[in-house]
Every structure is written in structure tokens, then in C-alpha cells.
Image (cartoon, rainbow, N blue to C red; front, top):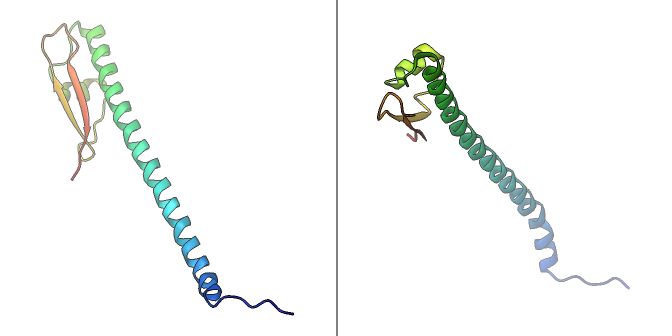
Length: 107
């Protein structure tokens, strides 16, 4: 004898595929967002490190740290994407490492 199924079984079976697909897409979107934020954090870290290395190279070659960010970009090849990052570069004295802070430029 054939087993009788509940009426909601067909409804549940029909919703299983769309709900499963939506869950997979949501997981994929979340993973991409996490990957993108990790990439942005790494970009900030790399730019700050490049600025510090450029400042140290300037100090080693010239005996003073660069007066401003433009000098560092022009003479030591450091490139800052102004659309993506904001750099706070503050020098206290010529023989002290400048305070360098890199932030993401959020529109």
C-alpha cells in the first residue's frame, strides 16, 4: 500500500531549491565581501610600510626625513592613490621619523 504524504510536503519540496540557491548566493556574497575587506586592509598596511621605508631611505641618503609627502613621492618613488587613500604625514623634526597614518578614502 502506498504511503500518503502530507499536503505541505509538495510545498516544502518546491521551496527547497530556491531557498538553497539563495543560501549559496548569500554565502558567496559574504565570502567576497570578507575577501575584499581583507584586501583593503592589506593595501593600507603596504602603503604605510612603503611610506616608512621611503622615509628611512631618505634619512639614510640625505640625513633628514622628507618635509612632506610630495617630496617622498617625487624623489623616492612612493605612489599614493589619492582616490583610494588619505595619508596624514606630520613631521616633528628633521631627525625624527614622521607620524604617518594611512586611512581608506570613503566616498
